[in-house]
Amino acid sequence: MNTTAEFGYNTDLEHDNFTTSERLGTKYNFNINGKVLGVFSSKDQCFLLSQVTSSFGDDCMVGTIDAREVTIRDEESSFSLLLSNNELSAEAMQISMMLSGKDTSEELSAGIPIEQTTRFENLAKLGIALERQDMRFGERMLVCGIEKAKFDKYKAATMGSKKI
Image 1: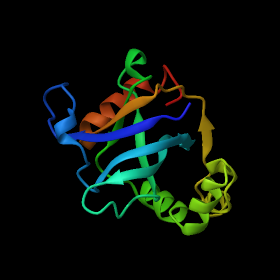
Image 2: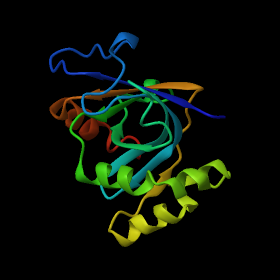
Image 3: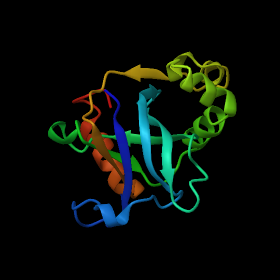
Image 4: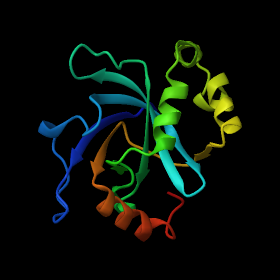
């Protein structure tokens, strides 16, 4: 099943009400939706990789790879909600830049899984060895970016209970 990620954000540090559809986009980029390619771990971080299907403006980001550090809020919501760190890490930016080339897009269009693309394999040579995590998602999921302090709180709380 193909899963569509809908990107949103919430800068509220005090409340746990997350995002709604009128707050689509993220603090640092303009991606609206993406085709989920999988969740991958490297060291103590997990990254959601998706291929952008729509972005604000003139859809200039369509086809590129969106990488963001993620964790779950709780087990019940993990099927339809991931939390992402609003503070983009150097690793997330490097993954996005490395995988957003025309050659990766062509390989994905040919049905090659992201982890078998040439550039994905090159990430390991740069010190970012990504390992696919077994995550099941519904047809649609919300990826809600939250501020780093809140993200770190959820990440610490879920590290022992699930491999994400």
